[in-house]
Each structure stands twice: as C-alpha cells, then as structure tokens.
Length: 84
Image (cartoon, rainbow, N blue to C red; front, side, top):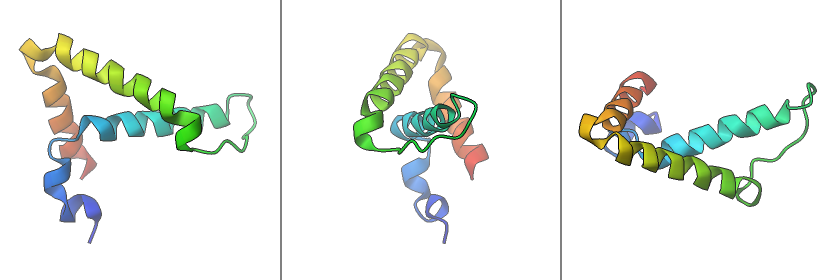
C-alpha cells in the first residue's frame, strides 16, 4: 500500500522535481539546527519556494551539461532503485 510502490510508474525514474523537493526539505532541516539548537522553522512554500527553485535549476543545468553521458538519467534510475 506504499504510494511509491502503488504509483511506481510516477517515480520511475525518480522525477527531477522530487529530487529538488527532497534537497529543499534537507536544507530546511539543516536550517533548523543552524545555530546549534533546534529552532522552529516551518517548511512552507512561502519560506522555501526560492530554495526549491534554486535546487531545481541547478539539477536542470547539471542534466543539460552532462547529457552526453546520461549521468543525471542514471542517477535518477539509481535513486528509484534504492528508494524502494
């Protein structure tokens, strides 16, 4: 009943937007501990839209610049395989 298994076709290969969102969530977690003490920082679209867009743009540029090697494609496939 896990959504990743039920909706496997939507995550194979791992979509670039899912990777960008994951990186954004990780950055939020790092921000919470930035001062060495956990702060109450909300993970909201208003607070993290620009962070998400920066990650998405960086991933898209990486994909474009490594396209001849299909490197990003292989990373997405690998993430799908190990995330299951």
